[in-house]
Length: 185
Image 1 (cartoon, rainbow, N blue to C red):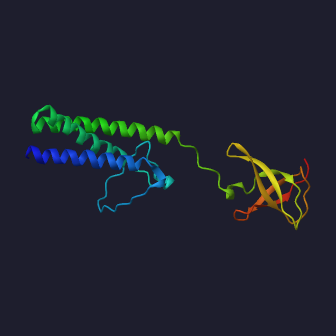
Image 2: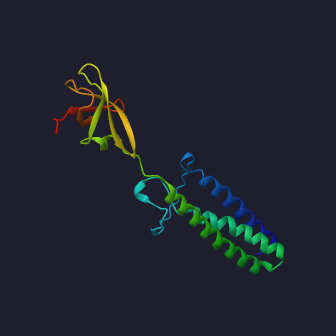
Image 3: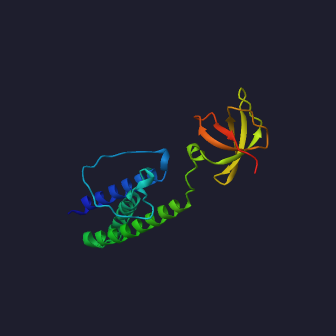
């Protein structure tokens, strides 16, 4: 392989790897889906959770390798170590880039918060009425979930005074919950 072609390969690798790695770090705000008809074996990595369905993959490791492979190859070429030496330097830099990308994305994955509670998961929980509920006029309930005190609009078939304990029977879209009064303890 000629020195010019090898330099073009390293330059393309550095540019494409860096650009796509930066774009992948934008996260959920940027999606590019490529259909590649090759089925690779499943490898479990700490930052890959297929069950979440968020499209997270091991691509950052590949892009980290690609970016630093190109940069290492260009540095090896600038040092004048020849094509084989430049390729060896590129491979070492690429391995380092892959490890760095793995570490960064694994740490970012650990720093993510838990998924918020879906309103449907509140059915069956107990809450306290904070604004009186009448059959014709919805009120509000207060309960603790996701680590904070939450207030939700609530309606019921019967009047329920402020301060009474209630059970959540159903969720009505985003407009609130349907509750029933619980007898005093």
